[in-house]
Figure 1 (cartoon, helix red, strand yellow):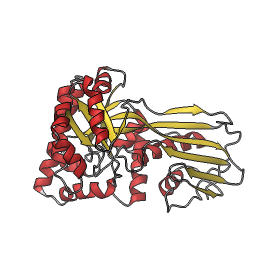
Figure 2: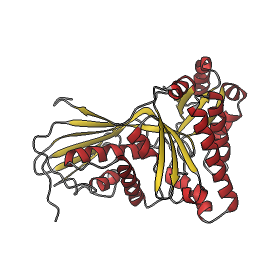
Figure 3: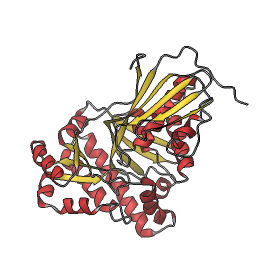
Figure 4: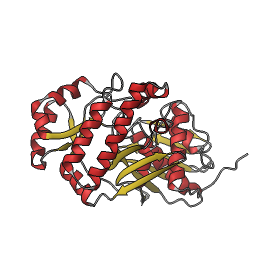
Length: 350
């Protein structure tokens, strides 16, 4: 039987990790899809929309887990006693990946709304695993943490899941991730480099007001590929090719090429399955004003709602675009890139 760990004199601390926007190649990070496609690549950028876990001392004989987003909390004898069902089930399952701890309170929260398409639930999972690792002295390499997080999430959802969200949360910056048998190759461009400057000038982010459900949409997209549907496989190969083009354009800090790749990726993606796009996004994409201002745009994640990401043709048109988006009922967010995880010491009253 595993002995419960007591953290001793615990100084409160927090772990803050970024969420991500995916520019191209989303869904290809889901196993075994990338094995079926070949030369699969996903391109994403970590943004300053964060997920946070705060750890504090609690009663010695118990542990507490709470979510500010859901307004729920559970208490148990230790961190292995939290229920696997309900809104905190994913976090509870992740805590069982580490030795049990008592005498701690763990608070979890996302800045992004539920169903944003920014990978917030996966990022929060990463933040929790980093916090639990520090709490228990269980240190893992970044690639090990990403794989464990993916498999914990898949076990909880009883569905196929990808790895790009966890890698973005663990690495920050702008990433081009290639998926190969038995390994991944993740290349990173810093947020403060030329590519980051280009995105800060040209990129925009707006919430559609519709929450998406990624597992449902993802399964509709990849089912045909797993069944060997030739048309679906060709579309995914097209997405992989466009993702490679997006990475080349990003690496060159080329806004026109990046925008064209984002547009091409979305043009293929929205034909993969019903429900990937929304009537509102389709109407916006057909609007001449939007097409004049925007080089390329797509829904983040699996689509079906959530966040709309895109690139302006001319940064000077940002105000006009934001007025147009707001006029459709969308909520415009500031677009800021982010580095990787950070640990923060927290005062007793913080």
